[in-house]
Image 1 (cartoon, helix red, strand yellow):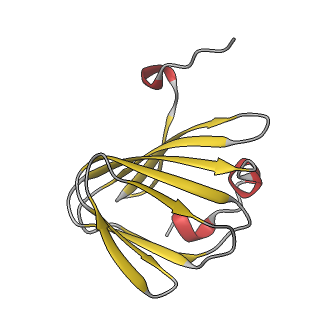
Image 2: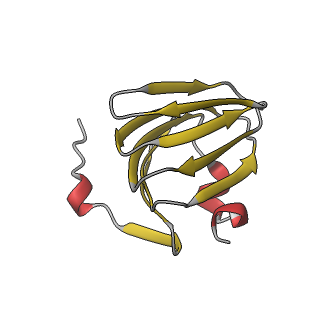
Length: 115
């Protein structure tokens, strides 16, 4: 059994509006993401299935042209290969689950997040 504590997981600041804490496991990646109001994750897609759980703030998700604003307690599933973008309407905290693991994050090939 492995137990993680977010306060012990390093926080990586990727750009002025976006930071994350990441736990990579054998079959999934778990991330706690911090996005400041006005922060945008540009449109992208990946082969990973994604679950996003809003913990704090209002977050606008746009999937394949369809827009939805999520609030704390909302859970969104993003299927593999679906283009999506995100905008923080308030300071936000979101927990994301990815399966399989985000190999691009492990290799540091996530330049779209570092702009």
